[in-house]
Length: 181
Image (tube, rainbow, N blue to C red; front, side):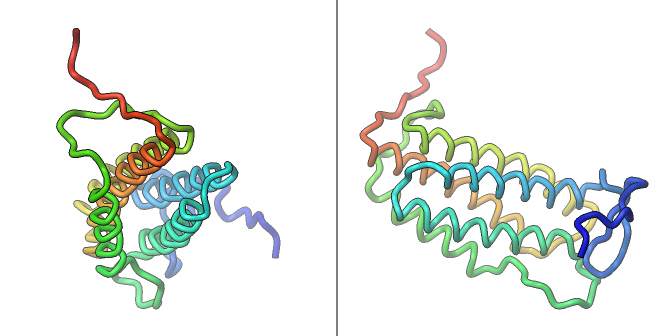
């Protein structure tokens, strides 16, 4: 199988189910942002993080493939594809809740940074928020699986709390934003 098909040379691509859309459509933009986030997690995984960080990020990468597939498959298509589920959302919530038990209470905004991995997780959070904004627009015009938006929203929270946990474990104090001096 060749990597290039030439079918996209005129600026269109196929969704699952065969429908062709412009490459600048919101749907393609959405699953493209998922691909960017997934690739960025691959960059994080090249570092010397702990096994716990690695296994969790690798699991998220697999879920991001499911998310991209879900986004690339219009709801009216009868093809059975993996979809983001309520269970995926609930698992993120449980991990967030478990991690927050050992973190200082938030009373101010936190300046992104800390350890290298912590800072990278903060960047992943911002990428998830960017994805969320695009998916909200897409959902307003083309109704999506009802678990997608909660999943992306929790995922950005998950990255935030994971960054905080990683920085705490690395003994990197959080920088608190206290407004202008």
